[in-house]
Amino acid sequence: LEKGKYKHDEKKDCAILICEFSIENKEIIDLESDEIREDIAQIIERYSIPDDFKKISGVYDMYLKKLETKEKTVYKIMQARLSTPGKKYCKNFYPHLALGDPTCYIVRINDCIRKITIDLIGGNA
Figure (tube, rainbow, N blue to C red):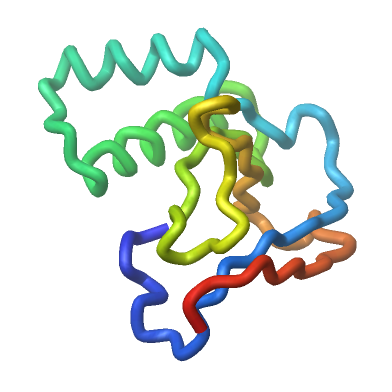
């Protein structure tokens, strides 16, 4: 997602989406695996990619497209560790120091979602 994409939304509450998926094992990719992290690091170094959100996102997009072509599959879900919105947006703050960044599942193709439950956990609104 692009940073700031929802900054004009009226509701700023933090929410957790609890989802049930129906996918094959080959349709999910763990972006935190040692192999993928090493591949991404090598690409960034080889092409001197600056530490810029949009440019790094482009590296991941390119990497996934090439991998999907090579593996002859489509990754419907990506598993990654992402930072939390922070205390400004969530009253029940995540214990980052103890647990590190939380695991997140990023759905790329919505047809695998079977059920969604929304848990509002508070915020500024």
